[in-house]
Length: 101
Image (cartoon, rainbow, N blue to C red):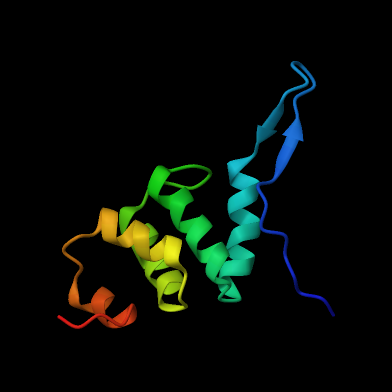
């Protein structure tokens, strides 16, 4: 059984404007499924949604936790996000992403 979950934004066409719109809530739902399977890209993308409060409640701690799990798998974009947004990483985060204090 193929358990691959597409990691693109879930979008729909608005009947009123015929514009393509992003449904962040639906995107978060699918990304969470992939993140639960420990998919690094899904962890990063879901972390961004939490950081921005798109489709989920804004939660900086959850964003950091998800980004750290992604970075621990070698995701360079997640590591860059952590470096930019968490310059003073707590010890638990340093350990998770393999940094020495």
